[in-house]
Image (cartoon, rainbow, N blue to C red; front, side, top):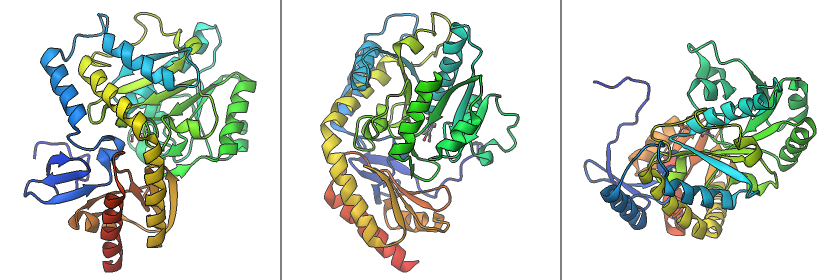
Length: 379
Ligand SMILES: Cc1ncc(COP(=O)(O)O)c(C=O)c1O
């Protein structure tokens, strides 16, 4: 009654979670194959994460970025350690949209600080980068813009996996290219390796920044620490959020040092960004996800195989970020699965999406696909 009705909420109230399971207010158990949309990477109530959060909350939650922050330093070292070059720097904020907003600002400022008037970014149809004006303007899907126009100036939209459409949009004032290696909200659409390599070459030839939005694909989701690592590319900037905090809000920009250096004291900031609680949580997630990477790939193959056996559409994605193109509205299927105790999601209208916690095991995958089989038969 008191909430703005901007969400079409499903009729269930989850009150507790444990591992890959959620429980509603009547004690019914659900298998969670959505993880709060790729957020609860270690599942629910993970003992180490819970312990770290409680310990940190007892000691210190927040101090502000006016002061030194050893947790940020420690987490930044870990994140840069996984990046393709150690010559990189990190900025902390609170969400994916904020991280992308920062990346957009950083791209503009990088060129301005060199006296170059380049500010435009090329982004891609079916991409999704967030709901703030910068990130929304970068999101080349008109349905999200509707009623909120005018969008921020300076974004040109190319076709995904089509290098000629990127080249056509190049201008003197183009600053960079921004993309997801697997478009999550847009329907779990994978970039082709050849396309990404061509984008990389184009960026190098033209002196453009390559920005990879790893908000959904990052931190182990696809079976590599960062999703771009599947493709042998070297982005100048990546953005992270979602799974990094295991449920505690955090957003991150990792940028090549030369680019990062254009944000000098006072030019950008965030009150909550990278507070002690968020960083401690993320440190646990990073440590655990590193141990899970091989398993994520194995479980991803297993889930893919089980989904293919269902024969309900083409399976797409990598690792534990999978979608099935059903070719029809799949919201009914999601609702029916929920009734049967399986939490999944429908994205881009017709794509059933699977984002289980990264701790998922074979028996959970079997349980989930058995439920789906029943639901599909029924419908
Ligand atoms: C690739 C990508 N970028 C950015 C965002 C926005 O993140 P947030 O909702 O944390 O602002 C999302 C959210 O779905 C996303 O999938």
